[in-house]
Length: 74
Image 1 (cartoon, one colour):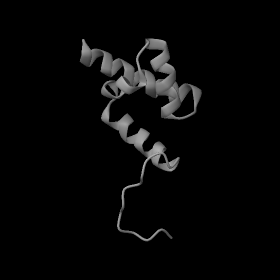
Image 2 (cartoon, one colour; image 1 turned 90 degrees about the vertical axis):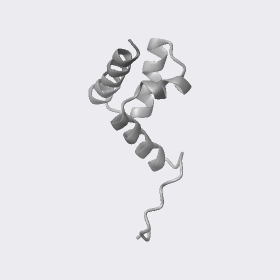
Image 3 (cartoon, helix red, strand yellow; image 1 turned 135 degrees about the horizontal axis):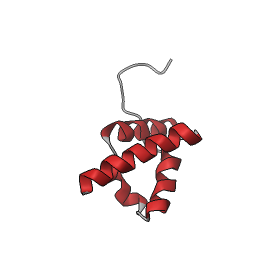
């Protein structure tokens, strides 16, 4: 059942972003409210591709530190 919900929740997140625009963070928070899930717990229901997209968004917003790539920031 847990795997089924994980797949369904991840698909809902993707559909929400495609249908409504916006970003993954907002979609996840809205769906947490809808399903009465704490945002802190939602991470275990997200697929790896969504987690990667969420990390990129957070990095772009300077919410998390960017990984050092060894490249100069030009």
